[in-house]
Amino acid sequence: MINELWEKQKPLMMTGVVSFICFLILAVVMMFDSTQILGINRWIKPIKFYTSIAIFVWTIAVFLNFLKGYEKASRRISWAMIVIFIVEMLIITGQAARGTTSHFNVVNPFDGMLYGIMGLAIVANTFLVGYLTYLYFKAKIELPKTILWGIRLGLIIFLLGSIEGGYMSSQTGHAVGVADGGKGLPLVNWSTEGGDLRVAHFFGLHAIQAIPVFAYLLEKLKLNISTALTFIFSIIYFAIFTFLFVQALNGQPFLSKLF
Image (cartoon, rainbow, N blue to C red; front, side):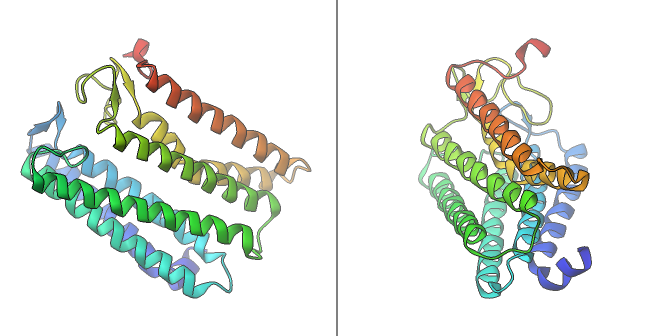
């Protein structure tokens, strides 16, 4: 499949590679630059986003590869996403280089404009994933039933995670009960002092990988109830996502007792 992905989904595959290389470069830069933004090294946010984007575009490349007969739609989705993430990462990396925040930054017209552009880009990406979800229900896809439903359910919960991200943006901050920044978990910096909407957002978005992989592993076991187990796993996953969202809304930190 890897060779086929490089042949048929080369733009997305290459975007993932470039994003991963940028992650490696900034990981080295971070070792020699101790400048902090909101209590953490300024390059941590770009590093996290470069990693997430690489994983995301590779995932989308796999999904699009199974959409036989929708090559034109696949090309439009892939190139639109590539443009979106180029815009996103130019802003996120540029703001980090300037020593300021990229998200929720409306302290002046210029920073507010950049934040607005990022918001529009992510809304566009959400619509693209919504369209991809529609195609996965419409198209005849040659995949085992269990894996097909794993992808469909993963896409649906991803969209819910995106909506939760929209709510987070409307609050102009990710922390609840405390100010953004402060004490947090290593690397991700999820607050250990108050609620943090990023936790549910993270789990919601990564349903697009977690649920299809779970379905794939069940399919390998050749169980007669693998599709039903995929639905049960998806329900549990959604319940955890909802719990984490409610937990954050109530101002309760994630794993505070451990840190």
